[in-house]
Structure formats: C-alpha cells, structure tokens
Image (tube, rainbow, N blue to C red; front, side):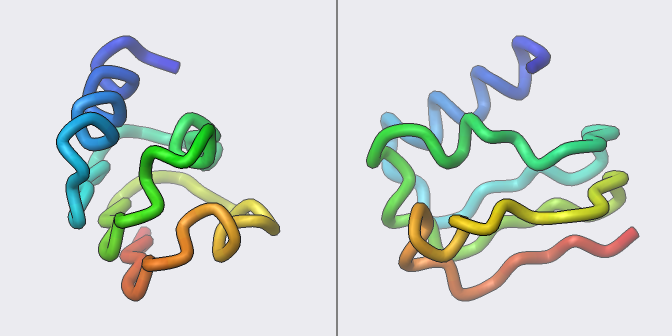
Length: 74
C-alpha cells in the first residue's frame, strides 16, 4: 500500500473520522488496511470514486458496521 494511502487511513483511525475520502487513488483492490483491528468501526461514509475496484471484501459490513454510504463510481 502506498505510504500516502496508509497515512490517510492511519489518521482517520486515530482521529475517529466518520467520513473517509479515497477518491482518485488508482486503487485496483480494496485497501485491507481499512478492515484491520477495530479502529474504523465508527466510519459512516467511504468515498472511493474513480478507482478500479472490481469487488469488495465479504466481511465489509462486519468490519465497518456503521457504514451507511459507499461511493464507488468508475
């Protein structure tokens, strides 16, 4: 994972962000760093516009239980 992306996710985890913007990151796979530990359980909105994702993790709802919006427009 690119260091900038890793830093963005780490800051969101530490500061308990409810919204996370990962738009235009040229992602081909869902960042599994988002599902590690219990740090992002309060995340409500995840914006991932203009990436190249083709699938989502099966345990997404379990790991991000407060997620109500996921934007993944190509």
